[in-house]
Image (tube, rainbow, N blue to C red; front, side, top):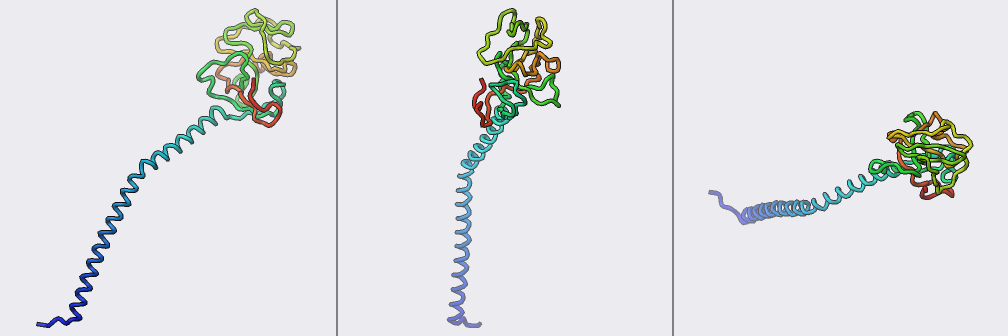
Length: 216
């Protein structure tokens, strides 16, 4: 039987010590990995809340832009002095989903729903079911003179409204404020505006002109 020398004992001891160190290292690594996983698991709810908040913000931004921030450029001066040619206007597309158009609203629409036409901006004068008549520069609704608290010009041409006009349950009679230079419900090519043709309500001018601000 071969005798073990002192050096062999030392070598054996070093190997055992190394093995124990490696074992401890592995155990320590496992422990660190477990601690890391626990830390990540604790942070998951916070990360989920953060992601949820980002999604909500993006969704709100989309809704705000889509329903309140659609931009349309004014064509012509039919709505002077409230709007001028090339004014950029924000359109509220949601308002008429929860309410009905009101007299005095400045609406954005395409005449007769013609998709090839540019957007028109006119003021609602007559509401569904009412009768409209123009006599000596004045508008009469259901036989009563319309009181308007916004600036308008005289009506030189009554167009197709040469006698009392009855609006259907889905029609609105619209006029431009600058009635000497406006294509509106007096013109056969425009006519009365059905609710389904209304794109939305013009509510703010964002081009930097003297009209910048809310539309009254």
